[in-house]
Image (cartoon, rainbow, N blue to C red; front, side, top):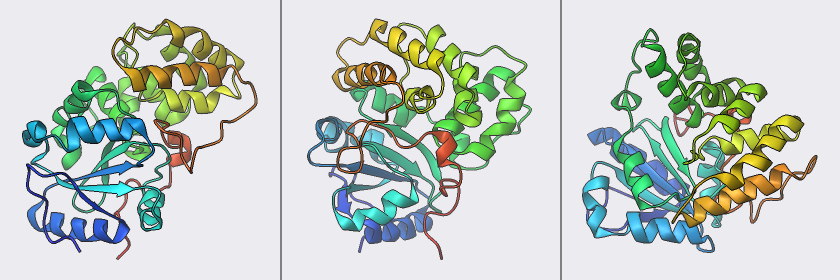
Length: 281
């Protein structure tokens, strides 16, 4: 049983679903969020994430605000937690409130700088109450996208409605994640800049089997993306481009989840419980 958070300079504790339950109990005492690393020993990006971020004393300051746990997804004791949060690709770094509600997730390993930026730039509101839905259109689009990436569909839709009167670059990715909008997915792919944000691409890929135009956009656009020094991300982008060209066929997961492959799209994650308490009482 986990009685308290590990010291900031130490590696995350290793455990399973029962340990995660205990960690949420500890988090509800002091109010700190929980950072869960779903990883596998056979997954190179998982090992990079551990070595460069989670186990590196140099990053203690970036992690000291969290209760932390590392879950080996190949162990049976991990399965309850994986099912609860609909985890299907590794690594998945998932942040949750003390009551178990998911705040956000990062799937794959885009590199040390990107992960540290993700840890540092969560909207504070996602740790508590959300701001009013009458935010500016651009701010609403950014928040709608963030909620969509976290699988918080119902919460994100009012912000998306507000964002429709604006022209933010986050608008089409948010439409993809929150409404499963195929045309928005195609536009987002075709209009993305040279540094491609990969977070929502897997949801676009999930829709590509039923949309030749989207599949073609993914297949043609992604190999053009500039990705210097981002090995795992580059591999993901090339995989998506190749997979988009295989019409009507779905890739088989490796050991229950492809390395660096995110979980189901937002459309299939609705109703998984990502916005409810982590564990039934």
